[in-house]
Image (cartoon, rainbow, N blue to C red; front, side, top):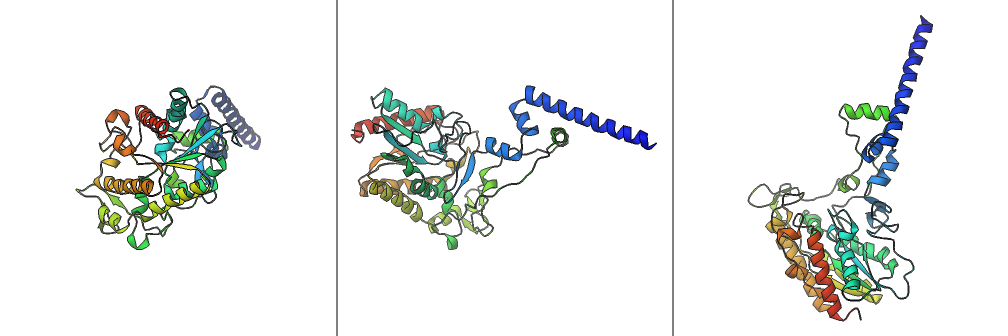
Length: 369
C-alpha cells in the first residue's frame, strides 16, 4: 500500500514537472510578450521592463532608462552625448506629459523631436539638439528640482518651459495646509506583490481570476501621504466641489493663489540665467471640448480653464519682467479636435503644429544666431 502511494505521488510530481517544463518551453518559444511577462518573469524583471517610472533621490521619480524609447540617462529619445560636443547647441525641454508626449507611442511623434528636425531640415540649424526632459505628471515643483540636480548636467544652451495644468492639482488642497511643498505627492514605495516561481501555478491562478498585476500606476507607487489634505473632487453637479472640504473647486483655488507656481518658475529662470542659459517660456495650450478618451473631459471644466488662465498670465508677466524669450502657445495653437487626443495631450497633428510654430519663432527671434 505504501509502495503504491509512493509511486502515485511520484507519478503526480513527475507529471507536474513535465507540465511545468512543457508550459515554460511553449511560453518561452511561442508565447506572446504579455504571456512571457505573466508566466515567466520575476517581479524585479517585470518592474524593470514594464514600469515607466523609477525613484530618483530628491526629484521623487523619473523615467526608467532603456525602457522603450527612454535613453540611458532617463530622457525620452535617443542617447545623449556627454560631455556635449563643442559644436552642439543643446535645448532642453522641461515639462510634464504634454512635453513627454503622453499617448504618443514613439518619441519621434513628440514636439521636442519634431522641433529638432524642423530646425535642421527647414532652417539649416543642423547643430541644434533638443532633449525631451518632460516626465508625465511633473509639475513645476519636480521640474525645478530636476533642472537643478539633473538637467543642468546636460550643459544646455537653452531651456524651454511648458507647464501649467499639473500645478492646478497642487493648489487643490485644504487652504489651511497650502504650502510650498507638493503635499499630494508621496514618497516612492516598493510594491512587493511577489509572483509564484511556478509558471504552471501562475497559469492556474490567472485562469481562476487572479489578475497577476504586471505594472503599477504612479499613484500606486507614490500615493498621497496619510495626512494629505487634498480635494476629493466631485464634478457630477453643475459646479465642481471638493466634497471633503465643503468648498467649491473655485473657492479652493481662490484661497490658494498660484504663488508657488510663480516661485518655482522664478527659481528655474534664475538658475538658468546664473549659468548663461537662455530661457524660452511658453503659455500652456489646451482644447476645451469633451473627448471620448481617457481624461477626455478634464479641460472642459471651467475651474481648470480659469486656473490655467491664471498660470498663463504669470508666464506672460515673467517673460516681460525678466526679458525672456516668450511664445504665446495658448493663443496660437489650434483647439480643433484633430490636433488633440483628449484636450490636454496633443495628437500627431498637434505636436507637428506646435513644433512648426516654435521652429518659426526661434528661427526668427535671433536667439539661435
